[in-house]
Amino acid sequence: MSSNETETRKRLMLLMTRHQRQIFGYIYTLVPSRHDAEDILQETSLVICEKFDDFKEGTDFGAWACQIAWWNVRRARQKFARSKVVFDDEVLESVAMTATTMTEELDHRHEALGHCLSKLHPRDRDLLLTRYEPGGGVEAAAQQSGRSLEAAYKALTRLRKLLHDCVTQQMTMEAEA
Image 1 (tube, helix red, strand yellow):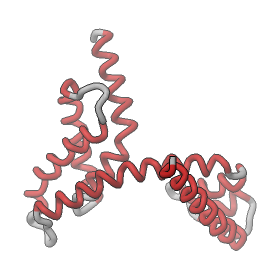
Image 2 (cartoon, helix red, strand yellow; image 1 turned 180 degrees about the horizontal axis):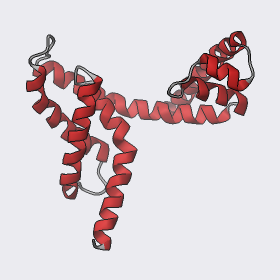
Image 3 (cartoon, rainbow, N blue to C red; image 1 turned 45 degrees about the vertical axis):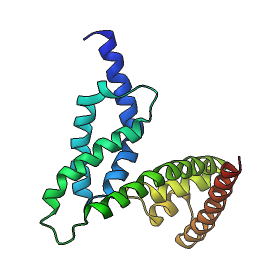
Image 4 (cartoon, one colour; image 1 turned 90 degrees about the horizontal axis):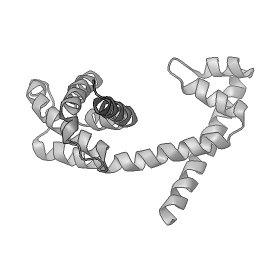
């Protein structure tokens, strides 16, 4: 494998890693189940790898990848036609457009949340992260933080409000800038 091919693979992997959540979220808004979305994400990832040479450096990889996902969703619609609820093309296109516009806002909110989390006291941040990690719960968060269950619930309520206010303020400042 040449060094150019190695660099191309590294760039592809970096872009796929950075945008996988966005691509999956886009697909999941357009299909009836998480399982179907995961299948389509795998198919989309294969097509992205096959067509990566067609990607124009400096353009929006997420948008390019979501366009590939769009065509995979359309192709998969035949499979969904047997299910009880099938949306027509107009509804599907409307949802796709909404998902595309929301992705950017959600990315900004995610960045703002990261900023706000970094401002929290480490004990509070650990409580939140333990609560929301996969398999976590209030009981585990309370135990790990050394708080009673009641104190953990109260702290989580206070921290959620604090984060909500912080993210809202951060988004407002970005919009005004």
